[in-house]
Structures are given as C-alpha cells and as structure tokens.
Image (cartoon, rainbow over the protein chains, first blue to last red):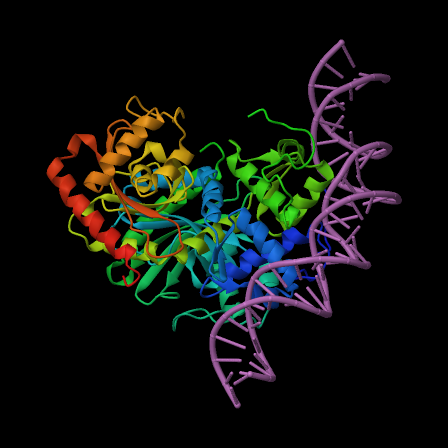
Length: 265
Length: 265
DNA sequence: TGCCTGCGTTCAATCTACTGAACACCAACC
DNA sequence: GGTTGGTGTTCAGTAGATTGAACGCAGGCA
C-alpha cells in the first residue's frame, strides 16, 4: 500500500499543494468555522490567512456560488450546503443507524443519554445522540468537538492508540485544556489514566468537563481496515449515579461496541 | 441523466468561475454526496464531472489533505471535516437553540416529535429534531433532504413564496416525486394546496410521505433580511391523532414560529 | 501465456488563474 | 472641508496550475 507520503512537514500555508485554490478554500471554511461570531469580512479572511484580497475575493465568489458560504451584507458565513454534506457523511455510516437501533431496545441504555463519537486528532466529534430520558438534555450538539482529555470517550479512544501515537499527540509537559477543578492537567496524568482504562476496559469521567456530571465510555474495536475510530458514552448526573447501574451500562455499551466492531453486525 | 457532454465547461456554469478549482472541488463533494454508495473512484469522478483524470487527481489530493474527503483503498468518500463544518453552521443558528428550549417547556409539544427545517431550492433540509416521546422514533436524521411536495414543512415553506417563484420551481406539467398513494402528483395539486395553506395558516400532510403518519407544519415568518426560510413541523401517528390535539399543536407551533421570527426572541 | 481494459500516476508545454498596485467608495475623525 | 483608515473591486502581466498523452500496474479473459 503505497507506503507513506511522508513529507508532511509544516503544512500550514505556503507549502505547495496540488491545487492551491482548493487548499485555500478549505482554509477559508475552517477560518469561518473557528471564528467566534461565525462571520468574517473579505479583508478579515485575507488578513488572517495571508492571502491577497483579490484572490480571496475570487475564492469567496466561487464558494458562494457553490453555496458552501453565504454572503450577509459585508460579511461571509458558512453556507447551508455544509449541513447537507455533513449529513450525507453521517447517513453513510452504518454505525450511526445501528447505534440508534440498539439504544432504543437495550434494557438499561434505552432510558439514558448515550452518544457516539469519533476521534479526530486530539479532539473527539460527536456523531449522534440518543436521548432516552427527555428530562435531562445535554447542551452539546451533534458535530461538536471536545478535547480528548476532557471527556470519557476521548480517553477511551486514546487508550486504543499505541503509546508512541499518544506520546506524539501529548509530548511530556503538554498543558491540557481545563474546564473544571477535576480536569486532568498534565500529559502524565492522562497517560496514567490510559493504563487504568486498558486494564478495566472502559473509561470513567468524574466531573472533568462539567460539574455534577459523570460519564462512562468504551471504544469500538476498529473493524479491520480504514474508517475513523469510534467510541460510545453514557452521561449521567453524579447525584443519581450508582456503581451498580454503571456496571449495567458498561455491559450494554460493550455489547453495542462489539456489534459495531463486527462488520457482520 | 445521460448528459455526458464532451469537453469542458458544458458543466453547470456556462461562463468561467472566478476560481475554477474551487467550483470543481465543490462539484466533487456533491457528486460524492449524491452517489448511492457514497464511494467513487478517481475515474468515476473524472468521467461524471467531465474533468481530466490528472486534474481530478490533484483536486482529490488537495481535498484529502483538507480532510474534506477520505481515501478508502481505491475509492474516495466524504471526509469527517464536513461533519464539523456542518455542525459549526448549525451551532451559529440561534433559531436551533431556541427551538430546543421552547419545545422542552411547551405544554403540548414537549411530548411530541417536533422538527425544524429550512428551504433549499425544491427540497427541505431538517436542521434539528426534538423527541418528546422516546417510543416513537423517526427514521429521518438531521440534515436529511426531502422534496418540498412530500412533506408538511415543505408545503408550508412553499406557501410563503411568491406565486411566480413557485411557478419557477414547478412549471405546469411537472411530475412530482411519489412515495405513497396519497402523495401529490402534479404541480396543479401542489398549487391548490398552497392556497389552502395560506388561508388557514398551516399545512397538513396526510400520509403523503409515510403511510400511517400525519404532519402539521407552519412557516417561520422571515425575520427581516437574509437567512434561509425556516419551518416547523409536528409528526404524529394517524391512529392516535385527533383534531383537538392538532389545534393545540398548531397553536404552539405558531407561537414558536412567531418567537423565532422576532429577532428579539 | 498473451492480450486486453481498467485503474492511478507522471511530466513538460500551454494557457489560465493569480497577483498587487491602483481604484472607487464610505465613515470617522481632526 | 481635508484627511486617514477602512471596505471591496478592477485589470494587465506573469507565475504556475492544468492538461493529455504516455506510463506502470493489476485483474479478467481467451
């Protein structure tokens, strides 16, 4: 298999791309997605990405025509076609369909808030959410990103990687993002947790991202070849959480994970 | 559509794009999204889009580097970055947040399955779904597309357009897509319904997309300037649906629509 | 075995898309 | 009023992306 196109060097910009206009267009989309307000002017984008204004103007025109972005007065924002494309991606994932089906009929999980996520670098992206308990609603939405160190699924997925991959993502001394007093702070703490997770086969998150909320998570065994690595999690209020219930949920999570991991379903 | 015209630029845009590479890259994404299996080879894409193989190869490399597509062996498929971007679009829509909030506290709607959708040409795209009743689950997912003529929201959104816009989308004699025996079949039937919807202020769908399922829908009054036109719908089983309950739901839908239409919330 | 027909990749020549300075415009400021 | 700093747009010249034929390779078939 084609070995490695190693060379990744420091990508960023400037480095040659086989189709620079496309690479820059993608950078525009990311810049818009990353901007707090979600709206940027032509000049903003040109400045931020280091692209001449005239070139940026051309890119924006082409992106607008494809409805990948929208013009709102002087500002530009992401376009609705992206919703379609994102949905097309998700609808092709059999795992998501199976996820919904299983949650609906599982004895314990069917009454809980369950999520399926995928690993994306040092973040996880939530793909789907099953809400068995309408009263407890999460503020998180499908497609949201979270740093791996801050959530149960993230740690579960990390535990599946090889140690040298983990070390590459989190060199010693890395400062981790912090959201609560209990958030992990150093790469060392994270690696210690990974060991525990591998031993017990699931991850536990204890108010590390949200006070009052705990989370159990398991990885989905990577089925054969390609495709992103997936993980499952259940979220519960710490106040009502019990170890016995946790054991039941982990059991069902693992069963679902096994079924997702088997191409045969 | 067997319209494989030879050579360049018979493609969508009669005239040249300000950034052809970007336009073509967008076409690649759409082709992948539209393909039944979601996977196409380089040659497939080159053939379908009328782009030379070598150019297509460059586009794909750039798209892959941006993670907008993934390589799976010899095939290409949509990439996970699209989930992120689509989610970024949705997270910027205050309407979606407000939609969830309102549904959770509304007396009648809080126990129903409610959806918010947006108009996109002659289709609607579902943006979010509130499930107040875990037992009844829809097979549809967020981001799915539906022909306007086949669902309540579609008809409600259509009724908001000017007559000449409707005529442009559905010239007389247009054959509409059909999913059940009750689906509308001609542009004339559709236009007749539009008149009714405008009179009564909401749309009713009676098993036109799924047997056994009815649907009530209202448009969200377009708030001022730009932005897509939005619609709301409640789905119910025909077996348990009553006119009184319907009246209550329409009342709440309209209240939510009014609140979404007002920039002040 | 040899002959196809399919795939993706390569490369030098060409033509086109990118550039950057100049432009027109608006609003705020002095 | 004049000036400054901001926006987006224009256009001719040139750097460089695009191209199509040629290539290597793998699988199907006789």
